[in-house]
Amino acid sequence: MQSNSLTGRHALVTGAARGIGAEIARTLAAEGAVLTLLGRDREALQRVADSLAGGGHGVVAADVASPEAVQAAFAEARAARGPVAVLVNNAGAAESAPFLKTSFELWQRMLSVNLTGSFLCAQAALPDMLDTGWGRIVNIASTAGQKGYAYVAAYTAAKHGVIGLTRSLALEVARKGITVNAVCPGYTDTDILRNSVANVVGKTGRSEADALAEFSSVNPQKRIVQPSEVADAVRWLCGPGAASVTGQSISVSGGEVT
Image (cartoon, rainbow, N blue to C red):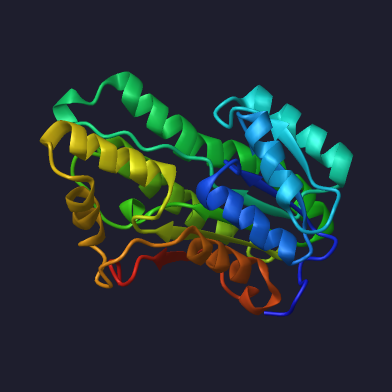
């Protein structure tokens, strides 16, 4: 990929305050993009923005599950940094429960942040991309969107929905200079994984090392994916070398999904 291939492009990353989202922001900034970081924790977002290469980056606070908040956030970002050229839908959450103990509220939370948020942000960003004839939408899904996992039915259903959304939108805009793809990480070194490990420890009494080994065991490489590896896949999809790649769900999982 060419260095600084995103120079002058306005990239908006949701869920960018930490973990995968923050690493994606750093990676795209290093490619010359001007970043808007969107999330609910303005102070945490600002700390990431202040650490980015280049200048002109900013933050907007919004709940991606709220249509009104998303429209206002994108209007603010557009006024400050111009049309949105790259959208990375990274905001997400994972909660676990046996299926019969999955409440309607939990179901709705998983759909709202993981699926509806991606839908709303794509609708907000797409007009800019259509106007300029160029755009990149990358949805951060999960291997849970490519296969099933026990005890996370709501999360898995939401991530399957993200992949379906990716495929459908990619076909709609295929002749418009816009690509739409999904990146599907396996278990990655983030707060979500750390919370899952703590949950296993709390419920089973197993050690943290044993719990972590259980998560890494599903990866044929027997390790946890690093956020930088996910970010690098996003960088490639946003660059000139991936112009013919659209509607794809790229697994970053050490061969867990083939």
